[in-house]
Amino acid sequence: MTAFDVTQFKEEVSLASSGAGFFDFAVRGHHQIDVALSTNCNCREFEFRQFIRGTVTVQRGAITEDRSRDIGPVGGIGPQFSEDIAPDGQRYGHREEAGQAKTTPVAPENHYTNEQGITDQAGGCKYRGEDFPKFSIGRLESGDVVRVLMQFRGQILRHGPTDGAAGTVVQTREWTDIDQTINVP
Image 1 (cartoon, rainbow, N blue to C red):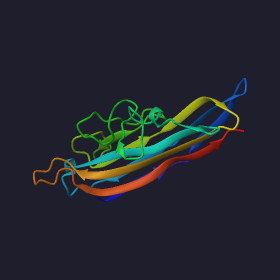
Image 2 (tube, rainbow, N blue to C red):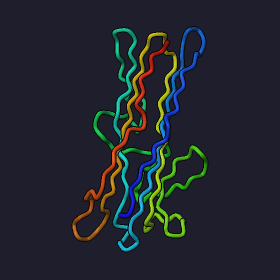
Image 3 (tube, one colour):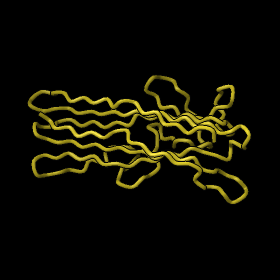
């Protein structure tokens, strides 16, 4: 591997009155993953994987409600890392799935390319992934406290070699995309 970079972008946060004393809150993160495998190796033997964990709570007075089920992959997120799934149902970095090139500013990218920049899921030596994790909630009241934590783990692992090393983690990176506490005025 010659590179495994994670670029994080500033969180986008909004809290706005929705009338009748209620508020709407939204937060969106954004990160991009760039992996370059050496062209001297058999690139098809390596894959990227993305995992997610975190918590979302809404506190109203003395009652705290866990809203973690409302965010991330089907069934929500929790305190342990689990494999992340893109909104279109694809898993990040799986070579056997169709690649997703960048089509719009907010479409997640998730594909391998060859030296010419052409999508090559099976044998490409460069991987680019992008994610826009988000959470929103309405009908918040003055005094409510919303806490959102979304953390990620990216791993490069061996994939399909015949020497018994399949699944071996080669490198790992961890980062936090969203870490917000909002006190509704």
